[in-house]
Length: 130
Image (cartoon, one colour):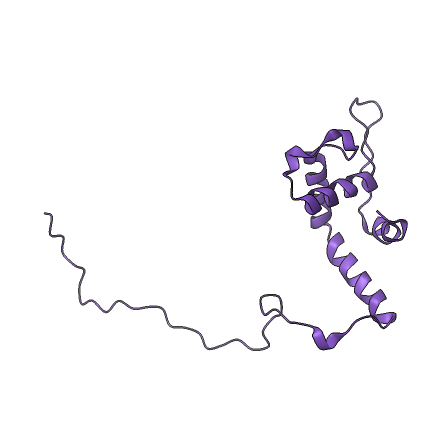
């Protein structure tokens, strides 16, 4: 991962909770290594559990947990907004080619309320098996 990108991402990551030094356990794998593992999985399409330990990214489960933690912390939304602001400031965004997806943009007004569906049958159909 390029240093410039890491310098933008690192401040957005939540600070890890310091563990009790009296309790044994593995040392936390550095965020940059884990992020590289996450990007490797997303780029190659391999399953998390098949992430090779030899690459030094930690286990696939470690990468997946950290990705989930960062998702909950809103890291990716913040990074997206930061990069868009940088591109806009540099004049490198062409908004004439932008697309708005209605599933992500709140409608200004709500439509009329739909009535509950009513049955058109005058009574329940009787069973023919009894």
